[in-house]
View 1 (tube, one colour):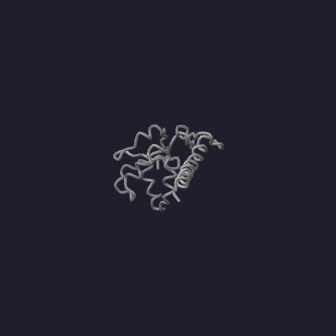
View 2: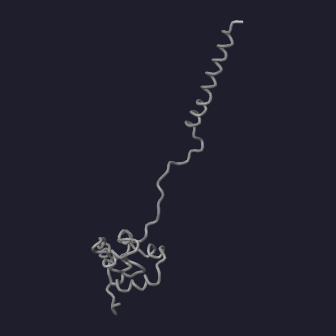
View 3: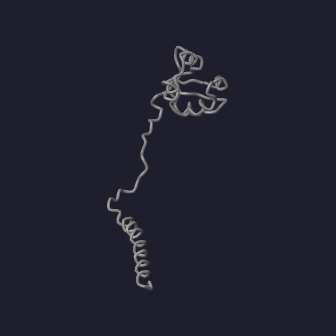
Length: 134
């Protein structure tokens, strides 16, 4: 590692997001993993999916070996300027219509769906009863 590491901005690192030019941010450090793209056990897609963001969680979630952590040293190119890293966005759920406990239109429809067939059945029974010849 260099004695005086270069400080990169997030925007600069985010530009390096291709197979032939891939930089990652892991634990506040910047790594040029371009030479490792073909050798990565998970394939180059895994590395490319971690570009343009802080890939620390992606890296830690996989559970890399000590050898993999040692190997990172040869790809180290500097530090990230933490002031330029965007704040993680919080999840905002989509807007839902307000809950209507009364549900009047739906209630009327359900009652009619129940009563109309009963009325037709009752009418059919009445017609059958009064038109029956004894």
